[in-house]
Image (cartoon, rainbow, N blue to C red; front, side, top):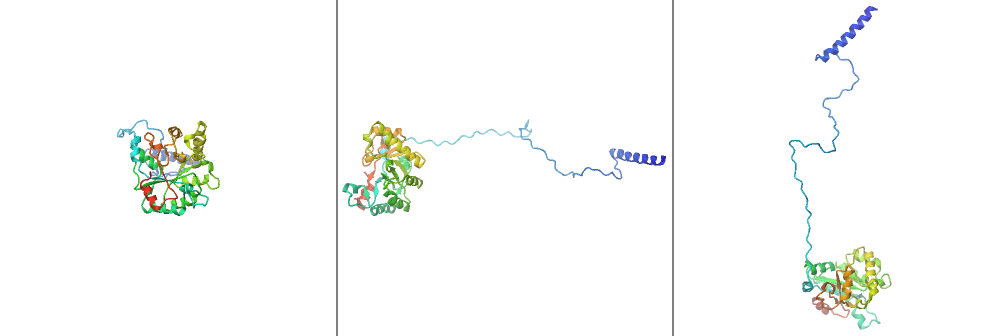
Length: 312
């Protein structure tokens, strides 16, 4: 019994002695098994990144100067005065109304404003053949006020009074020759038989045509009383803006008639330019008296060519 205890004590002593030797740098002949898993020395150690700013820069770090970005501002060109605008007003502006064949009931005066489809097609083909380029009122306005460049042989096509034949006969030809035009809309007739619909006005705008205002029911502005400005100008213009989804900037006077009072109201309503019919630019309000040539259904091709060269 004592021998057995002595053997166990000796074994324990030798085990302890082996661990002491290991601690002192002498490796034992054999280590006891362990439950700790072996991790290779080359395994990387993950360090949680620090998201906050460092407390100090390293001694070798280079501090870059702070750069303040200055936005590029394109200066707005100064707007020309009335005399300069008058000198630049050389672009022919053509005015059409109904595009249809004449009826027996049409008077000679009616036929002035009714251009048969065949006659209209010949005029549009002539513009294309002679390399005219249609422009928008925005382009004309920029040219008159800031001398912005225009394409060679510019021409501005306009249509008054919301007649449905403009959609059926004029628009297909404009699309065929990749031309644009401006439609001055009288709102009282929209969605009525024989006239443009609101949906067509919206589509014209989406096709790249320009939509302008032409009053509610075509009463001449020189006869308006105080209440008429809201009925004839403010409300119809807001209606058109709701249809197309953006501001309406251009106006055409019914019958081409205007006066200084109407110009002040148009300015207050936000219009940047207005078109009359035949006549000279006003020397003080050139942008609000832009002339147009009414294209008559009675004209020959030669007469059209002459008026295209000299629209006044």
